Image 1 (cartoon, one colour):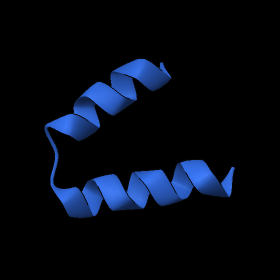
Image 2 (cartoon, rainbow, N blue to C red):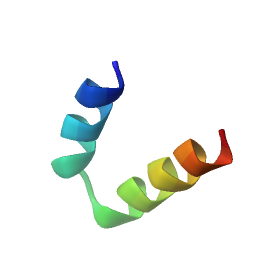
Image 3 (spheres, helix red, strand yellow):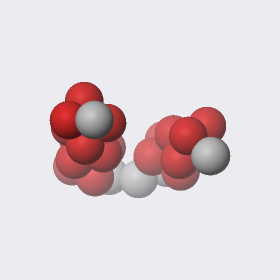
Image 4 (spheres, helix red, strand yellow):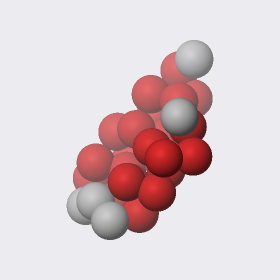
Length: 27
């Protein structure tokens, strides 16, 4: 789920978080 995804992002590098945020914005 999206919530689980964000929880995973919290423990990831900021670069990864930026990529995911950009991916979410692209949708």
